[in-house]
Image (cartoon, rainbow, N blue to C red; front, side, top):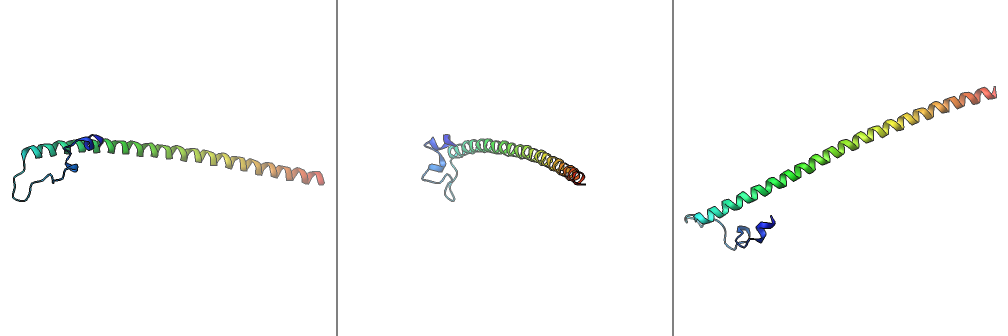
Length: 100
């Protein structure tokens, strides 16, 4: 898009509209210039869409990695809590035997 802004004849920067007044024929040079500008904008749009698609795909992949990491971390926490509960039960049982 920078290339468009630097062009002096860029239609978006022009004082007059790029289309003819009602009843006037379109100037072939103007139509050609508009077609070239349109092609340039279409290519730029394609590049921007591709960049947006790559960014979206990267974000999706990152979310999937983080969800997998979260699931592993939760599993580790559950395993530790289960081990702690089992050790507490064993400790209470040993304490009960020691008192008896």
